[in-house]
Image (cartoon, rainbow, N blue to C red):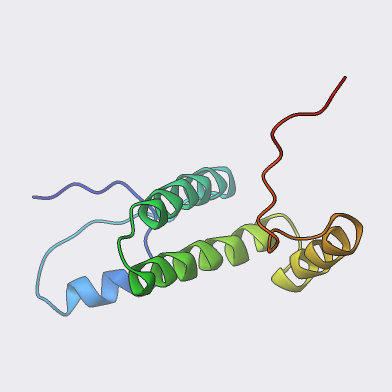
Length: 107
C-alpha cells in the first residue's frame, strides 16, 4: 500500500474510487489545513523548480496558483485582494521584467 499523507485536490478520492482501489482519507481541522496548504505550496514550488519544459513549468505554476487561491481564503481574503496588493507593489516598486540583478549597495 502506498502511503501519501498529504493534502490532495477535492476530486482525488472520487478518481481513486473509480479505479476500485481502497483508500483512507480524513478531513483536516483549520490549523492542519493551513499547515498542509503551506506544505503543498512548498511541494508545488519544488516541482516548478524541477520542471524541464515550458509546458511542465506552466502546469506546476497553475498548481501554485491553486494553492495561493486556497491560502488567500484561509487568511480571510481572496485572490482579487492579492492582485490588488500586487498592483500596489508594482506601482511603488516595479516588477521583475527588466531583469535587474542588484550586486551591492554602498553603506
